Amino acid sequence: MKILLRSLSVTTLLLISAFSSTFSQSLNDRLQQLSGVAANSYVAPAFNSFGANINGGWFTTPPKAKILGIDVEIGFIGMGSYFKDNCDHFSTSGSFRFSREQANSLTSSIDNAGVRGQVVDQIIQKDYGVMIYGPTITGSKSDHIYVTFAPQGSEEFTVSDPKYPFPVHVRLPSQKIDLGVGGVLDHFPMLPAATPQIKLGTVYGTQAIIRLLPSIKVSDDIGKLSFFGFGLQHNPAMWFNYPLPVDLSAGFFVQQIKVEDLLKINTTSFGLNVSKNFGFGWLGLTPYAGFMIENSKMNVSYSHTIDTDAGKENININFDMDGENSSRVNAGLNLRLFFVNLIADYNFSKNNSFTGGLLFNFGF
Image 1 (cartoon, one colour):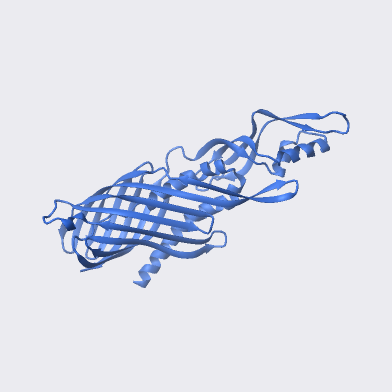
Image 2: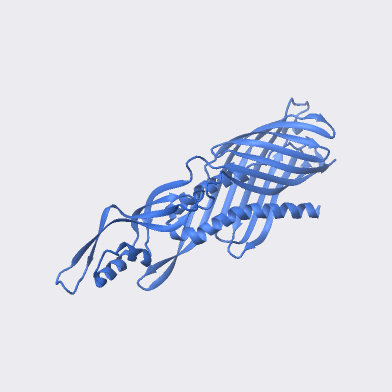
């Protein structure tokens, strides 16, 4: 049992940390180059797919309709969610603070060093309305994000020049700056995820379901990652005095993933599952289908360094995102062979996904 738990934890850590590494690299090395609105657009496709992933795999077979029993199921749930078409590029407008290096590039056409220095100082002191476009996190690594300065056509600055007794007006034309930020997943068609899962029951037709990865350091760059999920699944047949033609189960589930103070994802889901077992004691096939209401939310918080007249200054950037999925319909099969359950299902939603699992059931 210890070996099984360790194997599940290692596999889960590898898959979840791969996702977290993608976000961590983006936030630390890439998102610092973007404004909040652009950062939101940049990470949205991966977050929507990941939210769809981890809300899957809760329903497989229903709890037994009995007052008290010992049922333990432990195993591994793997998920994969396809990226939507045309999600590898974005284009958005918003505010952007240019660095001194970027301001120097924008003013390269100004020959007068004194005038140029004044314009640079003015540029780095305020946020400008810009257009930002390029690959999302799912896009090509070789494609870069660009920010368009003065998308309306030009920007005017007022400076002083010792040559003239009056203010001098300098007009900079619209230009684009390469932010050096590219995609990460390089058009990979889907995002994988995985989790160990334990079912414990049964009390009055109810089981508890736990997904757990204790806080563990993934790497120096990512820091500590933790994952916890909990749910209750109930069989309403517990309250009927006659057998039902199908098995029913209702459930409610919550999850949270944290990566240091950088990233936090919360999900909630509840729904109803219908299944029917065909077979006998040690061999059985159970088709199942269900409907779930769900949501997922992500909070991203990081520090961004900007240039000011007084030198470098750190500002905090914080934004929230809501996942696209609000409901799903799933259909699948559970194959039982002695105490081993193999599951596979497909989930139909705004972000379609599939789920597979290897589960070991012990009980009486």
